[in-house]
Amino acid sequence: MDTATGLEEAYRATGRRVTRQRRIVLRALEESDGHLDAEALHDRARVHDPDVSLATVYRTLAVLKEMGLVEEHRLGEEHSHYEPVRDEPHYHFTCRHCGRVIEFETPLVERIRKELSDKKGVSVLAAHLHVSGYCSDCRGAEEAVDDEA
Amino acid sequence: MDTATGLEEAYRATGRRVTRQRRIVLRALEESDGHLDAEALHDRARVHDPDVSLATVYRTLAVLKEMGLVEEHRLGEEHSHYEPVRDEPHYHFTCRHCGRVIEFETPLVERIRKELSDKKGVSVLAAHLHVSGYCSDCRGAEEAVDDEA
DNA sequence: GTCCATGCAAACTGTTTGCACGCGC
DNA sequence: GCGCGTGCAAACAGTTTGCATGGAC
Image 1 (cartoon, rainbow over the protein chains, first blue to last red):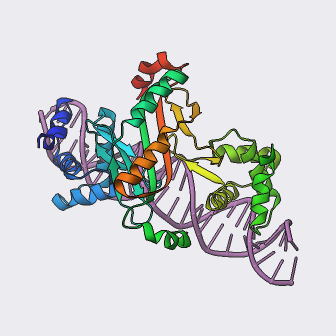
Image 2 (image 1 turned 90 degrees about the horizontal axis):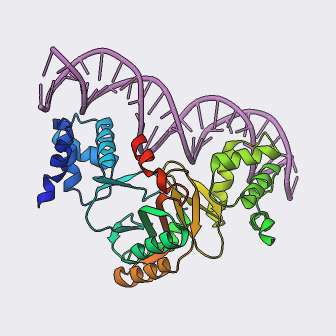
Image 3 (image 1 turned 180 degrees about the vertical axis):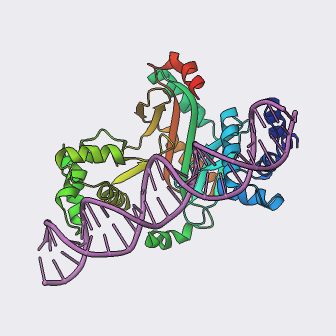
């Protein structure tokens, strides 16, 4: 796939220096299947170089966010997840029991955007839809989780 | 409106003690038009009693969340906003320039829930839709904000 | 050689918690 | 008066930042 070098090239194109650490973080991001948190990304980066610091991971993510190449999501409510921006918008479902994240697409959010623009006169830049519940594997375990809480 | 005593009664019904501080926080929540953050709620509570602590605000919110009477939202991405649960679900738009929060309704999210259940076999408990952009008053100010970033 | 990027540790923000006291029941 | 709820301050998690050094260009 050609997105494999995508981040690094887009990054280099901005005139920023491509350091060893930054390349490692970019690769780790690209190789991820999406929605990694900073800690997980850091762990993956350290496989290639144990000295990549968490601060560098955060700094790299900040740059990528600013460039619009990476999106930050609050899925589990406590910390952020990051993923490279793709062409088609998509949304997230998280399972409250096993934590699994399922991505899904729907044209309906686009319709909501339009309705909102028309009715309220706002200009929409982004729409995040986060659904939670139990995935097909965990549907029987609902009470167990509720008891834990 | 009868929701004015709603929180306190529901609260009392669980057998918990209704203290002066807790009553103040419940009232402040009910009198809010929704989506206050903990700090704002604390400020409002202190109007009635300067000694209500932020910890008590958080503890009260935690109880109400657990009871399902209050919802927590991540609107601005950095800290949480809280609002009493109402009958009809609604969603939020936030203006990136002035910070205004606009609530809106749409039946389309319900359709998305159904589609998701059918296609992926998941059981949906909650759906949060957060749209951001510029409100009608701030549509001209977009570049100014982008420059600040 | 310049100057951006790094690692480290300290700072910071929002939230939670341990403890001894206070007050609702 | 029992025991939950409180205020305070310290702890906490996630993230950001100041500073001196290092490495990309």
